[in-house]
Length: 390
Image (cartoon, rainbow, N blue to C red):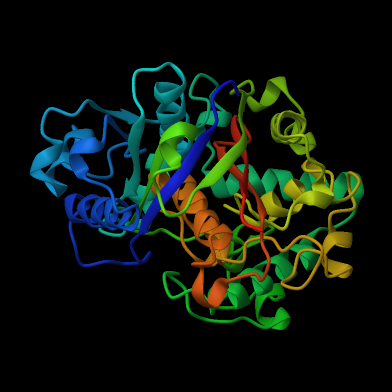
């Protein structure tokens, strides 16, 4: 990265089934981020909105809604970024590139989605639009079915991942109990998460309800600026790396289970940042399904292929472990408002690294890792964030 980019403010609504409009979610997150940065709205040079939509809300020209937050935003260039479940990270990269190109010094990035007003069937159908549509087999798969294929293939290649998946669910729900912004404020025992029951049915065998992320409303926002401008703000967290790797869309053209796109994105990010995994204090990763988090352990190099369960057995990914993963509760319990997810990860990492994470705070955190994924490991974004505090 030729120009250092910093996050200097963040906003984050509660995630869940919210009784407010899509527009209000955007306004609330925007105002909190701008206030958090102690920024004059007139100093914002550009606005980027991460928003998947895919027919879930009627607000088709959503980027223009950000201007409703402040009259000073009128005439500020704004655009929407879409890259499936990584739409938020796509918006962040658009903002980074605007600063790096010299077209902007300070930008606002917002991620938002309104989902709970639609039926589960409607949402499932909308999300499935992020799969390959030109193959009759793949186009007929929902995303639970896609990741169920991964779980079955994992069992065939390495042994059943079901116990590890249940432990991931239990871990992330326990973490969410400390996150007042999380949608699901409920812990699960291992027995509840691992057993198929009326309360925990199979959604797409072998995936159980407790293996699946939540349909959610919510928004998050961050303020980005150049290193030169960051000196004028009270707090700043630098992007040591921000990498984007996209793979083939058809699953038939790649080994989905190998998670090659995520693995390459992690390696490029570590190389760009000049860090190793051992330098990372915490990670927020894309656990759209528990099998995805398990595969991510392996893609980032925490364990060897087929050995992801060892990260749980050793305690490495728990609070107090070598690399706590999804202290926020992750998509699994915090919620997954698709366009907001990538921005949420960065907003909460910013708070961790500036000592503002409240009950989620990890003492002494200086370096954070973020992985946001679009589709079945198709769009893969990895960020390494670092604070300069002593």
